[in-house]
Amino acid sequence: MALDHDLVGVASEPVERSWRADDVILYALGVGAGAQDPTDELAFTTENTAGVELRVLPTFAVLAAQARTGRRLGDFDPAKLVHAEQAFELHAPLPVDGRVQVVSTVTGIADKGSGALVTTESTAADAETGKPLVTTRSGVFIRGEGGFGRSGSTSDPWALPERAPDEQVRYRTRPEQALVYRLSGDRNPLHADPAFAARGGFERPILHGLCTYGFTGRALLHALCDSDPDRFDAMSGRFSRPVLPGDELVVSIWRDEPGTALFRTATADGWVVIDRGRVRFH
Image (cartoon, rainbow, N blue to C red; front, side, top):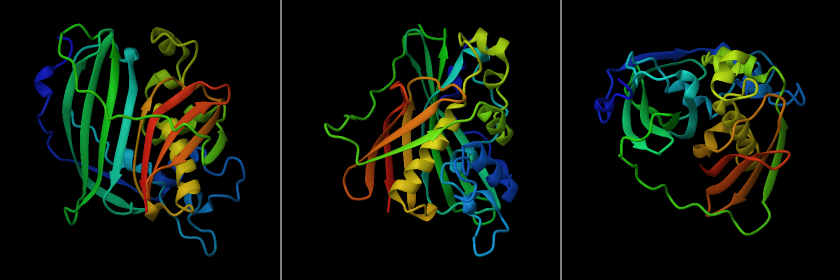
């Protein structure tokens, strides 16, 4: 068996997922909060600073809606799988201590020639009230699993604005960034084991795509929402190139219609790593 196409459209059984203050702090540190100035972003990195309430970074929503469903996409070399795209929408502010029920559905398996794009939608609802908290949509690209002749739908139009960015934020990742981020749950050896990374065609372990996504989300939060996570509504982007731990990231932001913006994340030498970015805020 290669990929299990029978999974498409079938919702998983609800799976419980929970987190606590330590989890949201560790996540914030994993996506670089406080690295440039430890006294910055204390609202995301400490729980006992006088006069500062612990808050949750909006991009933690992606982790909140992740849960092990016990279902496998098929038989393939996991070193050939990379994160291709990610979106989320917040229906309510994320609590510091949370418990949700997650339901996940494979929404499509598309033939991209050299590989397959598998898209998934997950919803996380408050375990006590049943009210929706997060909806996420993601895609993974699995090299070598294409050729079955079923193409996917085209993506929404996105055009790079023909003007300089309205905002630009620079963050440098650390050499050990992936080793910290993996403690938030993604233990894929692609991000730590040189031999495993080589099997995937990489010269050395790469940074998690969702770590780059988290760095980008921090930039959007501070530039567009005055650092208030309650004002952050939704974010989407496509991963276009891997990031190596230690790379500097440059997040370029173009304000669009009221409450929306486009963004693109690149390395300092100009390689685009997250493309076709959109963010919604209020």
